[in-house]
View 1 (cartoon, rainbow, N blue to C red):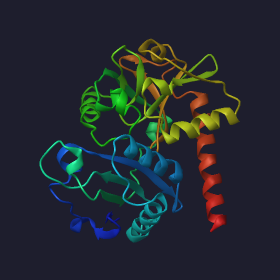
View 2: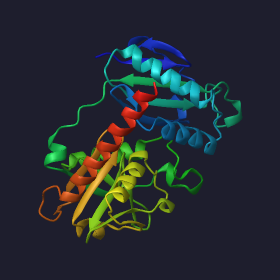
View 3: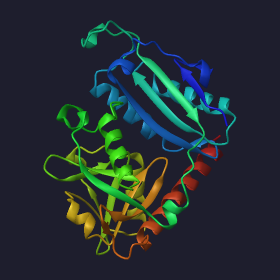
View 4: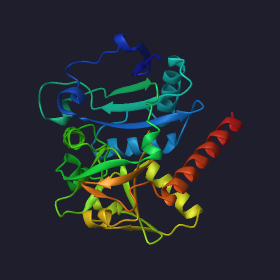
Amino acid sequence: MPIVVSINGVVFAEEDAKVSVFDRGFLYGDSVFEVYRTYDGVPFAEAAHLTRLARSAQRLLIPMPVDLGTLAREAAAAHVATGNPDSYLRLVITRGSGPLTYDLTTAKDPTRVIIAAPVPTIPESHYTAGVAVRIMQVSRPTDDKAAAGVKASNYLANLLAVHEAKQKGAHEAIITGRGGEVLEGASSNVFVVKDGRLRTPRSESGILAGITRATVLEAAHAVGLPVDEVALFPGDLYDADEVFITSSIREVVPVVKVDDRVIASGAPGPLVQQLHAAYRARIRERTQQAQRAH
């Protein structure tokens, strides 16, 4: 299935998509991004993703080149151009091109790129058998207070953490801050279930509060599951009744092993399965609402 790329509103085939080597997104990672997907051709939680994209750009002083309605239309056009039933959509806003200098004010004309690709296939075993994760202390650019919670493109620390985790047989790296507090996965949010309560790292800890995370919290409230947004530490994961991670593409994935410790029985627990079912029910509901509206 094809991949297409929209650059500043013009759709290109994958092999024809090009940006300048002087673009600051390429040279310095000076850009922000969002990732979401469609279900039955309808983008899920698109408004929330685009709003966060604009907020990230504002925090990094990157001017938004167009309004959010235009971005949504360009994303839709890119999806349709693939001919795929559903798409993985990656939107990137860079500061634009300029001289080889760290001076932000020299850049001009922010670049917007939208990649529409087939939705990655997640092995069914991730949901039925669960995955392993590794806890790692990582220092990231977004751990700085000025950039906390920004979805910036400089993901090198996260990439290296995931590589190390995979070298040790794990699916994801769970990142801790300087004080040892559990923050999030390299590309996911993390939750634990203990004594019938759902617990997840607090937003004030500097996490990227994911859109899927917010939907899972809504689902938890809907099924009557108490929720605590608190400081979590590695011991809380080791001693949990259930652990799971969330992201826009993977949705809700049970974790059955943290470092070398098996979680509870070593099998996905009932609450994570209930929450995943409730999450998918919300997707169906919102997708059908959008289809009826059109």
